[in-house]
Length: 155
Ligand SMILES: [Zn+2]
Image (cartoon, protein in one colour):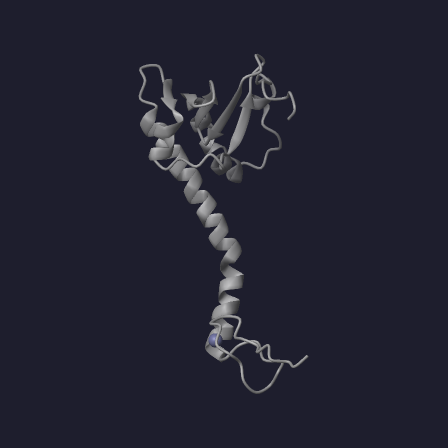
């Protein structure tokens, strides 16, 4: 079988001539290729973080009920750009309901297409924890030890 299969630059796809071990047509393409590979994880993380932020914003915007609860249809969430793939954590209640959270904004699936949006303001009060901890060197946080344990039911 003749070796008609020509090698192409991994970056731009130009046919490669000359040395057979070349992978790129130019230094520029090689640099660009490595730059792209090295930045892929960073870009991925940035995209996920942006999706989480957008989800949080959508939930906050749509959850304008008087008691911090609003029932919305799936289509409204999707219209606003909500992405069901990403959330920060899951909260399962003793009653067996599973709330999905994007930061302090969450939702409970009521039926196939309906969701109850909720908000947990107490999460916001914990936001100072990390900065407070960096100063004092004491071990443990006694104020947390008596907290109610409502998320220990496993996955
Ligand atoms: Zn090239």
